[in-house]
Image: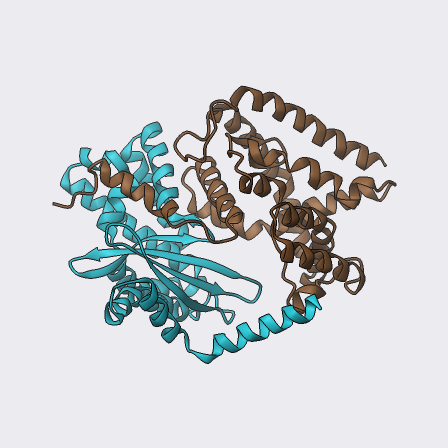
Amino acid sequence: MFLLSNRIEYSYGYFMKHLFNKRWLLIISLFIYSSINAEELELIAKPIDDLHQTLLEAMQLEGADQYESRIDLLTPVISNHFYFQYISRIVTGREWKKLDAATQQNFVSLFQQLTIATYANRFDKFNNERFTTNSVEELKNNRFLVRTGLKTVDETVSLDYILQQENNNWKIINVIANGVSDLSLKRVEYSQIIKASGFAQLMEEMQTQIAAQIQ
Amino acid sequence: MFASRLVTPLKLITLSVLLAIMTGCATTGGTDQVANNDPIEPTNRVFFNINESLDQNFIKPAAEAYVTMTPQPIRNAVTNFFDNLSYLNVVLNSFLQGKWDQGLQDSLRFLYNSTAGIGGLFDVATKIDMPKNDEDFGQTLATWGVDQGSYLYLPFFGPNTVRNTADFVPSTLLNPLFYASGIVLLPVTALNAVNTRANLLEASNIRDEAALDTYTFTREAYLQQREFLIFDGNPPVSQYDDFILETEDEGVLIIE
């Protein structure tokens, strides 16, 4: 009986899942949970859609010999859709204010290169993966959380994004994979390195890390 | 019998060490705060370095050789077998957390995989919509309101928290291997260890590529991952937002 009711529940879920396409479900859920209009919600989710679409294309440029092609493909999308200036301030914490403008800009540029190199390295083979956008939730201080999933053959990885505006454009400030926040992890890790070895050492290690992604 | 006698004292010794550490740090840990969650970091780092060294020199190469020599379907069967043996702990903790439907389903999953899945070698339950759940006594204690306590990096067992060490008792007692005896138990235990490490090869390679300070990276990723599991993959969003708000309060994020 339990199994039967369970089957019915899953079948119902399956039916509902395919009754509406995901874009409509997203818009409906957003109308329920938020006072933001549908057009704005589309704009909030757009950087994520663009990123996911480009990642799928990058994954089809398989192998180490296509690393540079993946970099070329990902660079404009990641550069446009991540708020690197803001991210850099968060991950460097109180150290940020101590840096001169040129060093700050060098760090932003280095962090951007590291992000692009990491994506190009990780998303290097395609095995029918697909992304789903599940919901959008409003956070404090005009930030939004977009919940998505990456479905692979074996599992679904939860990928959540926090976005906020830069000059009226919605940009990604954090990626949370299966509950692990990249931003908070880097903030703690970087502050540890700055405290132990200094800011110059942090930048040196980031450069080494970028070089290692290419190999 | 030898292996079970080896494994059990090992766990008991670890448990004793833990209890000793816990009495020292239970009062300083206390909450789920990220800032002050590692009061015994120097000790933890020593164990971390020992484990990493053992792993790099022995366990990881063994796992890589195992992957090279063993076809994927066989490795899947080995993983399924050991997962199924440890699943009674999931069943118990689903019930202890008041997830009655899930607990019932987990019980059926265990029975179905143990019989139709030929002793758990095949995960036939997932194919009929009885997915694998991830529960343990650490998560149960969290749902009961017990504080996380300090972060602990344990010899052999790796990252942990004071709260989570309590899981050693039910996970050991509910695993049928604990009651098994005979010469076969030692290779079986070794196979479990190597297979588990093999399943983590990709994750550990990603960590090694991504981390600048592997100790800190491991600790933060582990603690966040535990929160994710405690909330069954749906932790409160404030968790991801609060530290940004704190940074804003520090005045770092004022964009001129």
